[in-house]
Structures are given as structure tokens and as C-alpha cells.
Image 1 (cartoon, rainbow, N blue to C red):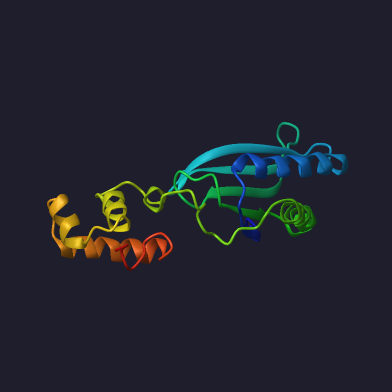
Image 2 (image 1 turned 90 degrees about the horizontal axis):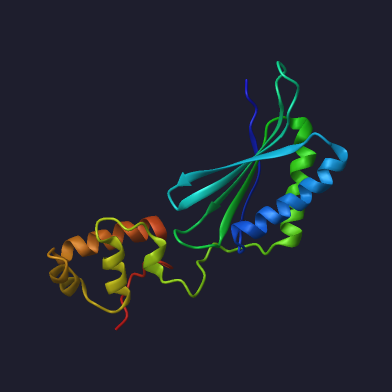
Length: 183
């Protein structure tokens, strides 16, 4: 049976590179205690873009299973944004919980926690996937167009515009998809 316990799940207002730098600094300290510890890294596609995964492990000689402490996931919260980033730590064995607690403390001590809001300079429509005219609908809505005008512009109906905005608001919240357009 594989043990996998999430030990940490926080958002940080820092780009991936700064978070990875903190993880690297922590790993450099851990290597003094566990000299064979390594961090194997891969990137994977997520809905909001590329996610970073790091597997903290101790490789063993040929024919023996590696010791896996757990893994780290760093996932962008919004598309085309360098922050906020969601950081999750997973532990594979209870005896390694202290390693993950140390890394969590390092991250919280050295990085600014986020409330999950997008950066203020980012246009809200760039934070959603570009499919089915969603970005265009949201952009025009935020710029003050009414649903009828948006529908005519996109060769659709105002009901379709309202429906898309409602679904987007449900998925991304009112901070990104406001209920009321600008006058």
C-alpha cells in the first residue's frame, strides 16, 4: 500500500523560480543530514499551465527500491501568470514528516503567502482559457459592452453571453468575472 499524505497546501505571491530557490536552499541543508537525498524534477501540463513536480528521494543501488520521501507540486493558479502559485507537499512515509515540516516552515518564513488574488496588472480575461470566445466575451463585458452588443459582435445571442458569463463566474469567481459590467 502506498502512503501519501498531503502535509502542506498554500498559495504564494512569488514566481516558480523563487519558490524553487527556497526548496533548493532547504535541500542543501537536508543533504547535510541525508547525503544521498536528491530532488528529481519534471514539468506536467495542468489546466492553468505547466506545473512543476519534484520528487524528494534517496536512490539506492541497482536492484533495491529507492527511498521516496514524497513529492512537491507547484501549480500556477491562473493562466499566463507568474503568481500566485499553489505549493503542495506530499509525504510518502510518516517517518519523513519532519523533513516536510521543515520545508513548509522554510517556505512560510521566506515567502509571502497569497490570498489567491491575481496580480493587479493582469487583465482578468487573460486568466481564463481561450476557448469558445470566453476571453472575448469577458474582455468586452469588463470594457462595458452590454450582452446584446457582445452577442451581435460574436454572431450569437445575449442569452448565450449571459450563460457563458454565469458559468465563468461560477468557475473563476467574481474577482475575475464581475456580475456587473462597467458603465
